[in-house]
Image (cartoon, rainbow, N blue to C red; front, side):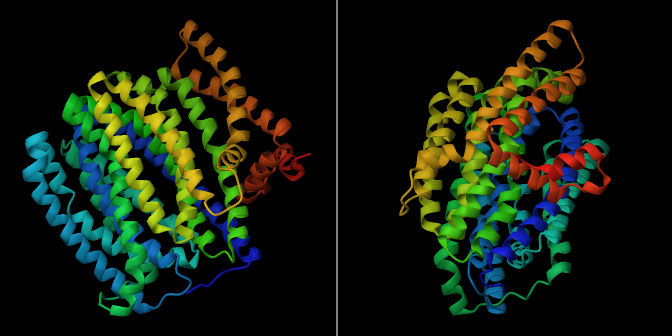
Length: 505
C-alpha cells in the first residue's frame, strides 16, 4: 500500500482527483436536483419528516464503518491484507450489533415518542448498517490508492441508484418515506457490488495484531461518528417530537438546501484532501496544502450560499411546490450553518490525516451535546428559532475547530480562519450588493422564478468574480488553476481560453 508521497506526486494526484470528482459532482448534483424536485412533489412534507428521523440510522450505516474502519486504514502509512480482513470482520460484527440495538430502540423509544409508522421506517434502515460495514473496505482501498476516478464512478453510481429507485417506488408504487429509505439501501448495495468489482473484497478474518493497530484509532473515530450523526440529525428528531413530523419535514428541506447540499460540494475535500494529506511528508507540507484547499473550497461554496439566501423566496416554492413555501425562511437563516459546516469538514480532514481521533471525538461530542441542547431549549418557539440557534452554534464551533487545529502550532486560530475565508466572504458582500436590488426589482415586476435565477445569478456572479479578480489575486489564481485543470479548454471559446491562460495579473 502507498507510503508518503512527494510534492509532485501529491500535486498530480490532487489535480487528477479534482478533475474526476468535479465532473462526477456536476452529474451527481444535476441528478440530485432533478430527483429532489420530483420526490418533493410525490411525497408530502410529513413523510420527509419521518424519513429525517430514519436518516439518523442511514447516516450511521454509511459513516461509522467509513470513519471507524476506513480512516483508521487510510491514515496508516502501511497496511496488509490482514488489516483489510480484520477491518471487514469488525465492520460486519459492529453492523449486526448496531442493527440489533436499533430494532430494540424502535420498540422502546421511537414508537412511543413518534408513532408506529416512523418506527417501521427506522427498522427498515437496519440492513444498511451491515452493508455499510462491507462497503467500507473497497472504498478504503481506492482512497489509499488515490484512485479518484473510480471513487467518482462509485459516488455517481450510488446517487443515480438512490434517485432512480426512490422515484420509481414513489411514482409506481405510491410509497412515501419507505421509497426514500429503500433508495438509500439500494445505493449502499450498489457501492458494495461495484466497489468489490473494482478492488475485490477479502474474506473476513480475525487477526489480533491487526485489530490492535486498527482499534486505537478506529474506536474513537467510530464513536465520534455517532456524535456527528446525532449532530447532523438530532435537530430533526427534536423538532419531530415537539412540533410534529410535518414541521420536521419543512425544517429538513431548509437544512438540506442550506447545509447538506453544500456539503456535497465539500465532498471534494473529504474525498481528495484526507487521503492526500495523509500521504504528506510532514506537518508543514500538510498545512500549506490544507490552506490552499480550504481557501478554494470557500471561494466555490460561499457564493452559492449567498445566491441561495437571495433567491430562496422565488425558487423554493417554484421548484418544490407551494407546500414547501414555509421552508424559505429556515433556508435563509441556515446559510451561516452551511458556510460553517463546509469549513469544519475541512478541519476534520486535517485531524483525521494527523491521526488525532481522540481530539475529533471530543470535538464531535461537544458539538453534538451543545447543538442538541440548544435545539431542545428553543424548539418550542418554532423552526425559525431553531434555524437561528443552529447557525449560531455552528459558527461558534467553527472557531473552536480552528483552535483545535492550531494546537501545538505558533499560529492564531482567528487569523488562520480569516485568511481561509476572507476572499470568499468579502466577495460575497459584493455579490449581495449587486444581486439583492435585482431580486427586489424582479419581485416587484412579478417576473417568473427562472428569470430571477438567471438575472440574479448573472449579476451577482459577475460582481463576485470581479471582486476576486481585483482584490484577491491569490484566490483568483487558485480559481483559474482549478478551471484549467477541470475544464476541457480546447473546447471553450477563444476569449475564455485566453482568460484562463492569462490567470491573475
